[in-house]
Amino acid sequence: MMWHEFASFVTWHIILTSTITITLALPVIILILPTILPSSIRLKFSEIPLGLTKRRNPKKHAIRNLENNKSLKSYVESLTSRSAKTTIGKQVAKTLKTHQVVVTTSKPNHMGYQHLQVLYQHEKDAYGCGVKSVLSSIMRFTVAKCMTGNVDNYYIPEKGKLQLVAWTQTIIKGDTLRAMVRVLF
Image 1 (tube, rainbow, N blue to C red):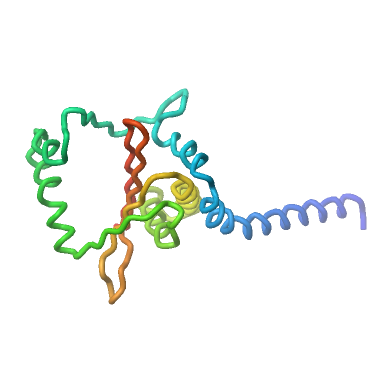
Image 2: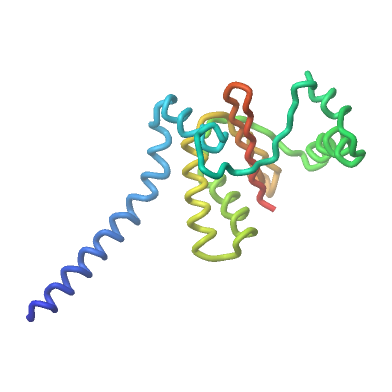
């Protein structure tokens, strides 16, 4: 065997071994690492999406000033758009009741495969089928699982079982609230 053939063999062996190792380790990292993170690291990690870290170009989000509203009712009454008032004041409750939506709350480290499925569908709708939507889903799922806060799970009955159709993750730190929504359809 010539030297360059041996070097090529060793290179491909290293690449193949590394790829297999990363592929096998990735599910372990995604599922186990977030469950063992201390709350101090989760809080620090959560500051990024809250916009509480120094960034050169901060991301723009929908920001609402709610200082003058002491309750949801006063907030809804302060809305000028009739459509927004109807949606928040009546339609949300009506839709939840009509579709028999079951809402549960859990911690991010209890998120599982159904949450990843909802997130993948959300990303697939944005990017189409492909590697980008898969990788984006895995990354966003891992980030969400590592953060602090609460996850509200929205289930509908389907074929005798509860099917997760959406989830939201709410993080509050000081006077900053961040809500992230992921919907299956």
